[in-house]
Length: 199
Image (cartoon, rainbow, N blue to C red):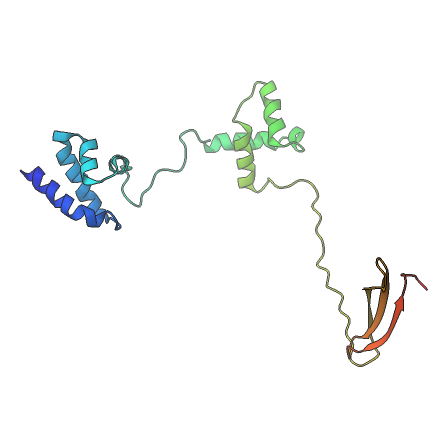
């Protein structure tokens, strides 16, 4: 009888709740209802009747058992201990390896029959010690100031411009040379030429 009441109540409120966001309390209530009703009819049939996605029901059941706020441990059980890290750094600091990256060091030590860890943890150890960086010389450009010309009066600074102008016939162009006074923005001289030249 209790199962039938739960089913009727959820079906009445289900149509309105389908299109709205479901709260955590409502999710828990639906999960408990599915657990109660699934003993007689199966989880899939109950989820279909209640318009609940079966994947969501199973996903809620597989949540992490960790209490909220604690989280999972971040370090692996296979991580290097402090004495192993010190041994790896000692190998990397040997004089014969001072100009080598961790990959050739790893290969050389393997040929000698010594294995501490793969080369990727070696990179991580060097980065943690601040010893890993780009070893090629990097070009550092100085901050150049943009040249800026300033005119405080007329006829102190001139600028020029060349513009191509169409001629009277097809495929003929003329070059219009204009000289401008920077302070007053007035045209101080101009010339029309058939072609550009240094004269």
